[in-house]
Image 1 (cartoon, rainbow over the protein chains, first blue to last red):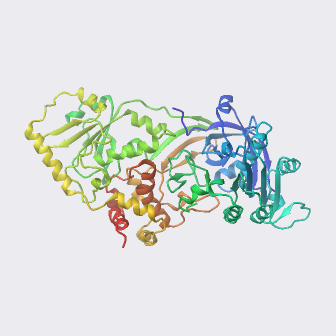
Image 2: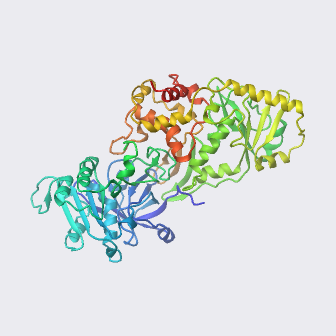
Image 3: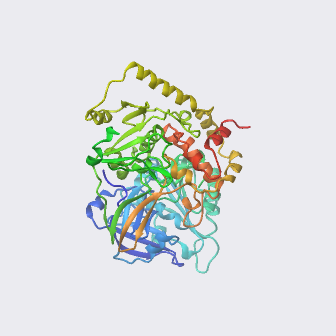
Length: 279
Length: 326
């Protein structure tokens, strides 16, 4: 029986400070044991627990794509004990990884369909993984049009800026990057994510929408998607809850009868509407 | 008790012993006094399989070393039928289809459960309302029934048969004894039971998450969590590190959905911010969510939560109020 509580050691290969407020850093981690690396097979939307001895563990969505080999990327907002400790670590230091955990985005159902990704702030992580996965040369042909609407409060709070710049150049991706209010030197869109979603008005025909962001963004984006004709079954969200075990035993991440760690974190809106609003 | 004679030398035997004011399950040695005929233990049998504090592994830097899982045979003796049933409910959590908890499962594999029927149920007992019985065979390997001068011994599983097989001194019960046993069982059953109907309660809970009933129920509750700690089926836990970055151990300890920090995010957001949501969670988890997931209520009617509650919240009254909305 493999012990699901044991973290595997992983080396911090690279640290990137993503945002100008320095609150979000991305960590590229690689397993010390090559067998662990081989065994860790994930699909975009899944998460893992990062472990720091003496501080504990915390769950993070995997921000890299399975098509990126040799490392796992996690973009971490400095908020609690583990994230603070992680922010203080440097390249070359060792942490632990436990996972992959949770369900994943239903990628097979997106095949031959249009995919609309709507995201705000630092919730873009697993959708970055998905976008990167779908754009990969071996996968791109499996999907029809891909639209990404991504926003942050200010230009300095956008994640993955270099990558966004590169994506702008692509003709197989319809990318809309927005900030909340006008800023000097900003040439992209200005406006809240729901407003820009309405403006871009992606077609709901043969399409799925994926939404990750702060609660207020989700609240105002969903009615817009519904107006555009997206059915609840085709609006897909990823939830965050406080978690410990990650395997449905410790009891804190449930919403109704569903454990976000094991039955989620990915749910469609139809599934969520069946659950109590305790999230 | 001669059934246990010699066993404490060859394997670990756990039984109800007095510790301070409480009866708890602890390892016994030859000559220790065990308490079978008094009230049920204050702490439930879950501690035998899922200790209140348990080491997951030790670490030195980022190197981890898991504990050795003992395969030494254990006997837990004098378990009440409600507690024996609770083990089956914990199995659904820790020995599930998706994940197995090796700490729990290894203890479960090693342990023979010997239960003792409840000839004198307490006023707070309501096992029969939850599908149980003071002489339930579920979750036990051998059931004992106290007949006064002797015990009626009933093997339940193969494991129980094997356990008894090695012991001398059993006699086939005679018809008179069997009759007396039936009388004891009947008398005990008659003392328990109310009008609770769990199917109706489930229907009410399915119907209305925002029932105004929850607005006031929690007002008496202090949020002390004793109900969850003593509950034989509550399984929530926290995982934390004890030590520094160089060396220490990762442990798990019992936690409670009645505590405000249980669900609080690092951002400060809390999906269950007040006593109302937390009380509702506890009741719904036992009588709705667990039923949705496992087709069983996560309650065995042991009555510990009612006995220990400092403000006399009686789960039977709560359920009756849900069952019979005004």
